[in-house]
Length: 297
Image (cartoon, rainbow, N blue to C red; front, side):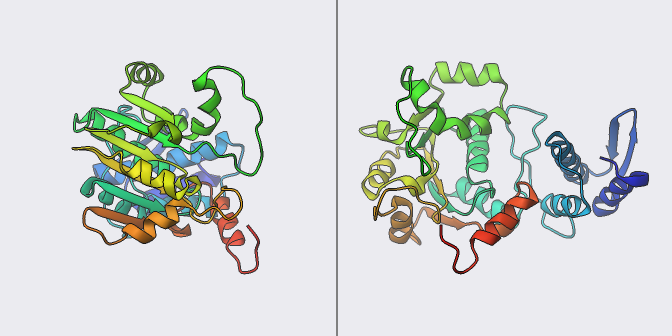
């Protein structure tokens, strides 16, 4: 992880102007708080890379440093979640606009390719608002649509049947809250994870409401979901409008809603792009390859 003759550590030190050293498998970083936080994000990226059995290349390190906000990028505050060890913050200018939009608008749409943090940041901001007692509950919804393959009959109760569709939302929460706290909040309905179809007829006050994978919602489902917004609530709708799994020529509710509602007061539309991808650098290359002219999706 440190690189030949600690080369990687020297690059991190130079990028963030911090003091960094390693001894007995422990990395020590000191300096201004914001610079230390950014440098720590890069070290965590390197650890994650090694856990996935991927060599730490110079390209990966440089990408991680850029994503953490070095080289003159604007200061970006951390999002306060329940796990103090989780250093969560916007890692690109687009992601910063997205977080600001959620905080400053009652309804926010976010579109963009895989890996841009659409779902992760929406969950993080919602959990932060819950921790600050600015909302009383979080409702996470997703259309139950398979990505190109039929899963067939799924055994078990309702939660077991919908769990495969909602797994990404649980994955995001596990990075921000202890497992026991997630379980307790789920049992007490402080956090509710439901299929989109189960939102009909409800009005949600004092809540953060997130619709994930919204490109797979129909126009009528989107209208139903948007009208669930109650008083003192925030609603976030996320999705990749280039990857709809709806059958046939069914119109995407996300595309339709963005077209209808863009520029209306109180509503924000944020469009992330491949430059906002913060997953493994290969993800950005994959998105670019599949965005090339003539590539069928």
